[in-house]
Image 1 (cartoon, rainbow, N blue to C red):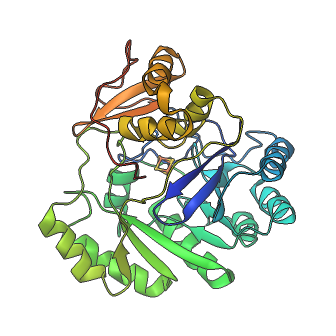
Image 2: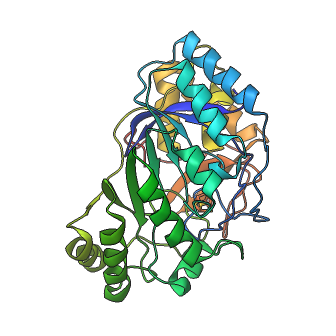
Length: 333
Ligand code: SF4
């Protein structure tokens, strides 16, 4: 599969079949917490990054082939999906193929464009990001393209909120020392009150962040966030579902399809292989380690498998041997 991955367990969407309409790290932000590494270079131009008809043909094939339980079809993946100029067409085409609800996970930075707002209206659920309450914090967290300003972000979210009739869920990624102080949280509370989203999710950088110094808030910071934002928001905890591969997908290829969009801890990879081929865990891990498409990054004591070519601050490397790590619970993060 080139444009689809999963289904994967999502903390906010249950079992999510991912549709990826842009190549790796095609994004106009360069978030310090990005699980896909740094955006090099950033792009702000909307283009036909991959052939839209091919994306929908692959979705049609996957739906016909039986993909197991799926709660949402989600446009998300290797970067910012609204950068694809055919996103609205793909959402409408996907809806013609399935009765499953369609979600778009976006940074929201292009919602200042009327055509992007119009295109996203076709989705059942839109999930933008809002992690800062002023330009300075916005720039420190997201390190955006010069065209993607904080004013445009806020104006775009407000304009879309007025237009959109589907579910509108905002994600607030909390980072220690960047947006867990009282002034920033008070500012976020004011913005959220004005935007009146259907749901607000407080998330933590639990997946490998692009920059090694990125940490979740400490207990005090998290309590402060819950106390200031708790009227609208709740903390989203790691999902408990299982990763799955489409029937017939070779294990190493399927794992690489997932880690290109969603890093997996070594324990998660082992649990996925154990589901499909219980006697082959070590052999598959050794093949993955030898595959030039995969690499390993260590963050806060956990080894994650990520796509080779991803650029992380710190110690991403190609393993020569399978990474050894105690098998952990098969939970998505
Ligand atoms: S987290 Fe999302 S918006 Fe931020 S750099 Fe990564 S892909 Fe782009």
